[in-house]
Amino acid sequence: MWGGRFAEGPSALMREINASIAFDKRLWRQDIEASRVHIAMLAAQGIVAQEDADAIEEGLDRIEDEFEANGVAEDPALEDIHMHVEHRLSESIGAAAGRLHTARSRNDQVATDFKLWVRDAIDMADEGIAALQKALVLRAEEHEASVMPGLTHLQSAQPVTLGHHLMAYYEMLRRDRSRLADARARLNECPLGAAALAGTSFPIDREATALALGFDRPTANSLDTVSDRDFALDYLMAATQCALHLSRLAEELVLWASQAYGYVQLSDAFSTGSSIMPQKRNPDAAELVRGHSGRIAGATVALVTVMKGLPLAYSKDMQDDKEPVFEAHDLLGVSLAAMAGMIESTSFDTERMRAATEAGHATATDFADWLVREADVPFREAHHITGRAVRMADEAKVPLWALPYDALRSIDERIKPAVFDVLSPDASVKSRTSFGGTAPAQVRKRIEAAKKALGMLE
Ligand code: ARG
Picture 1: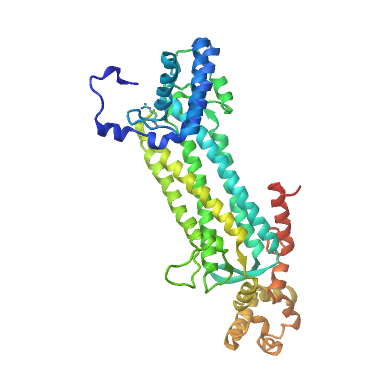
Picture 2: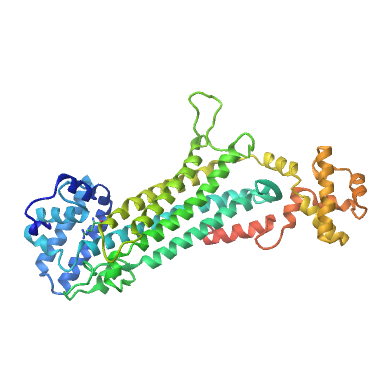
């Protein structure tokens, strides 16, 4: 396709390093669609005769059917998907095929195809995240009042509810969706017509092709257009942040499934056994979600590093933009689906969680707050008094609430029996009624808002 100025063909190694068909064939649908829109515009503008355009459109339809049925037959002599489509078109309709490439270049073509692909990837990620959010919300609803230890530094801190904990991930995923929506809005300008780098002398209608491909408008600078991969990076960065959230949830499931915690039993569907230790139920899916997040982050670093330092406009380095994006998309898709499956099917051992809450003196802050509120003790002093009560409970090897009243009173006479009302985990969570707090009534409100946002209320 570009052999005119060469006396000899490329070496086998040149072909090998140059070829992208093995991976960019994933763009075939986008390539055909963008070609269709381009040729219709060329005909409408009188740049190509209508009968040639008709032949090209029919040819493209046939190629689409063929690829749909049999996949793209890779020809090592044809570098990339753009050449494969065009070559197949010339086999199919003859010389008229050569008119398709009028007023475009592979540089604006690949940018257009790839943007269309990434736009779909964004939509798929959004759907996958929404499905996981729904799973979380339903489990949170079941457990809006189930107490568990809330941790800081992985140390028992204050009681929270499992519903509140699960809804924390709903919020993370909500931000992920908003980042993807931003990326989509920013992506949605059409590169087609920037041509090689400088635009074209043909009287093309970029507005028409942009709108026909579902873009909001054409891009505004042809040099920027063919050298821009921000859209791929925006997607990868949003995907990375989402993967990072999945990884943190996966880590919690791995910990919770361990014998030491015993908070969950992952379903058989999402556990694996050991070939040597018959008792094992390994949380492999959660571990792989955690592992995949590392590879997704790696894909982002790969493309950042490819792009860094490229002068304007197009350089062939940019052909290496696709594999990281494809890999991240595949890994994120399976991670989201596996996580939704795990969340839906995991059984929570709420008794274990309650016992752990009681064992960790998680209501010590409630004790101190009670002294402040009911006995007008300054908080610092209340903290100290409570610390002594905790030490006493540790020495007696009982939870805070199980200390006899006389023992508490010996620490400070301002302590009254009513303090026991705030020492149970249930009383503690119930009292955290500030907006966004862990009180079941608050959690319920957040769940209702989430269900509304997710379209889960009829
Ligand atoms: N396969 C190429 C890519 O993915 C298409 C663009 C080729 N452009 C060029 N000037 N060689 O980037």
